[in-house]
Every structure is written in structure tokens, then in C-alpha cells.
Image (cartoon, rainbow, N blue to C red):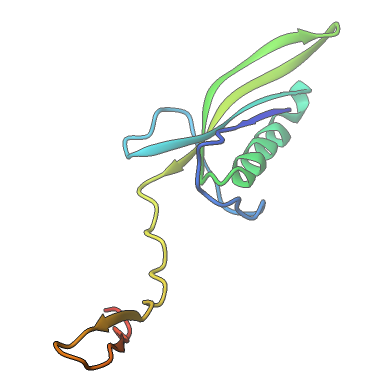
Length: 127
């Protein structure tokens, strides 16, 4: 099996046991490609090949895999099933969790000979 990851992704790798939807046509919803998969296996192992494709797509951070082609070919004189697929992330990714706001420091310099005061403003939890 040959797996090529898209290095431009920011998605974290997912647990290899996650659910991955298998598609045979381009999805109607927005999708982002996170890798390509190329798998060869014995014709009697077609379900195992698809299971491996789903597993590898999941590891790449995908929640779907688009099967581009399935065909038969000869590898070292042996006839095998060949699957080309694309690992996809369907939908719009959830926004990252909002980190706790950082207190802001403001320096106030009054008119005249007084010493500057530093005031820390804590914005409290964001809503």
C-alpha cells in the first residue's frame, strides 16, 4: 500500500478505529483532500482491501474516502485487485476551542510628576 499525505493539512491524525464513509462519487458537500491511497491485494481479499483503505484514511485525519478506481492488474506475474482512493475531510471543520483570554496590561501615565501606574484588565470568560 502506498499512502501519500498532503503536508499542507492542519488536521490532527485521528484514531485508526474512527468511522470513515466510503464514497464512490464526488461528494456534494464541501470536502478537503488530506491524502491519496493506492492499494494492491488478492482478488479474494476485496473487503480486506477496503478495510485497509478506511483504516489508512482515518490515520490521515479523514472522515471519508473517495474510491477513484478499482481494477485488476498484473504485479510480478500475479493478478491483483488495485484500488486508487482519496482520503477526504467532509464538511467544514469545527472552529478551534477558544483559549482562555489572556489578561491585558495597560500602562497609564497621568499628567504631572506622578508615577505611571500599571493596570491589569482581566476580560473574564468569553461568551
